[in-house]
Image (tube, rainbow, N blue to C red; front, side):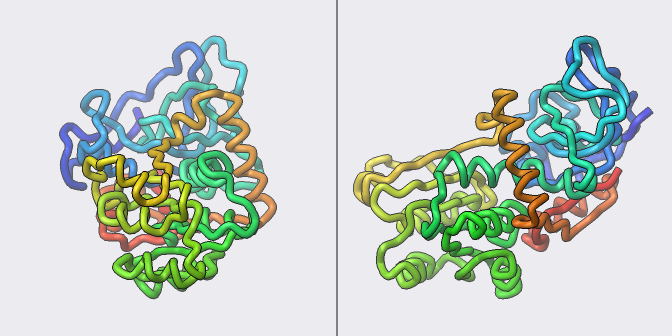
Length: 323
C-alpha cells in the first residue's frame, strides 16, 4: 500500500484527505517512482478549488516531484530501475508512489538533491521557456516580474539577471522586496497601485518590452500599461483570479501589444523540447547562476497547511512536501 492526499470534491484546503491507496503498477511505457519529494505550486490550488477541471474524482493533485524509479513497464527505454528522476506537469504528485509516462521523466543529476529537484522542475522549466522562448530576453532589456519573491519569481530574477536584463520585481511587502533584490532584482516595487508610474520613472519613460504576470485579474491592466509599443504581455498565472473577458481593441490602443497565455505543457509537449528545457535548467542551476530556494518544507500529510500558507502569500521561494 501507498499513501496519498486525495480530494473527493472541490473546495478549500480541508477537502484534501491523507488516505491509503494500492501501490500502482506501471503499464506499458510507464515507470513507477518512489517519491522522495513533491513540489507545491499554485496550479495545485487551481485543481483543488475547481478553477482547473479535474479529469475525474477522487483526484490526486500535484504536478511535480523527484524520486527513484522502482519498476518499469514494457517498452520503457528512457529510464531504468534505480535511476534518480524528476518530472513536472503530470497530475498525481501528492503520493508516496506514483506511475508516470516514462518519457515525461528526466534523469536528475547526482549533484542536485531530491528536494531541490522537486522544487525546481515546474517553476524552473516555466522560467526557462518564459525567458528563452515566449519572449527571448536579451542583455539590456528591462523586464517586469510580478510575484518576484515567489517560486517562479526568484528563479526569473536570477536567470534574467544572468542574461543581462534589468529586472523590476513586483512584490507585496518590504520583506519580499529585500528577498527579490537579493536574488537579482535591480529594482523592486511594493504593490501595484503605483506600478505604471514607477516603471515609467525607472525606464526614463521608455517602459518595458515584456511583463511576466502570474497574478492575473488584479494586475492585468497595470501590466499592460507598463509595456512599450509592440510589448509582450505574458499572463502565465491567476493568483488573484482569472482575467475577465477583455476587448482586444485595447491591445491596439495601448501600442499594438502582444498578449499570450502560455503553459508549460505546451512548451514541453515534445520529448525533445522537454529534454532541452530541463537540460538548460540543470545547467544554469549547476553553474550557480540560479539558486533554488526551498524556504518551506512540510510533511506531505500536512499539505493542507502548505496550501493555506501559499494562498495567504506567506511563502517565499519554493515549498516542498516530503512523503
